[in-house]
Length: 389
Image (cartoon, rainbow, N blue to C red; front, side, top):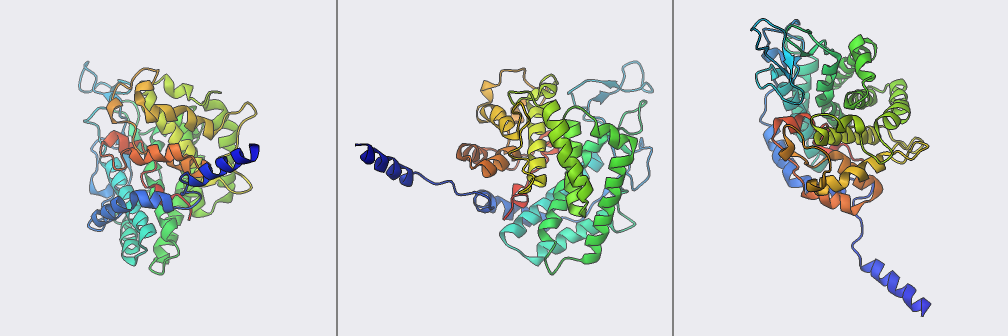
């Protein structure tokens, strides 16, 4: 009888659909292929546009300096010349964000073309990416200076802030796209080398300027995003010292200090957008694990002595991604109805842990959000270029 039961169990197991998208890109590619090629067709028609295309009258920087204004800062009713006042969580639509939009557009173009290259390796995609990278990082007439001295400024209060460094997460898919295409015969080595030098200079600024140090030490998603972008840029430039630093910081600072034992992020839950910020921080941590994990240093399966881990973080938020109505905390003051979308943490975690339920949920979510706030807070919009072959 026992032998018969064993055979029945084996038969049922054989008949069950198997988990396919293990450690390669096939499962992700099958979901995104049609959309990827459509995005690439759009990207092939786009001309380069950098920070030099528009200059803000309130910027303390020059033509080549990235400039943005703090989202939650508004005119003071006391007078037009008074310093702006804060309304946390409420975005002021009149603030200058043209440079941020240009950087997001740049990211979307390169992400789309690199994703299409993963589906159909064509030199036209490489050449189009190079045209945009040349404009942003090489051409002295249009390039951006490698710093964020004037990001998220506040009228009457600050010409720039460390908190503005988070705007540069939009450059992550640019360098990841270049890594995907790096070995193609059409790759212009001069443009690639100069671009790597640009990011090496940017990393120097991020790790030595007071703004960078301030952002690194931020106790919430800003600190996570500093590690995330530094890790991505360090990998692109081959900076092994910074890669190790980011890995250690994830294990010894981010995970133990930001995640609660149940997998939640208490510092995000007390904000005015607890749901969106929790998703954002989880996506950033998962991207760190995706970028930095190696066979000898597996951040995906790392856990603190009391059991905090990225897997626990994904598991905590998963039920609220699958059914947002279960969310037991307060709703976000803005954009509540626009989340969740196809969160990268979900697909990265599904592939890493071979979790079919997470993968199935990710497939059903929106893979092409158009809401500006969502796009800005979705650090990875093209997972195909991040999943290893």
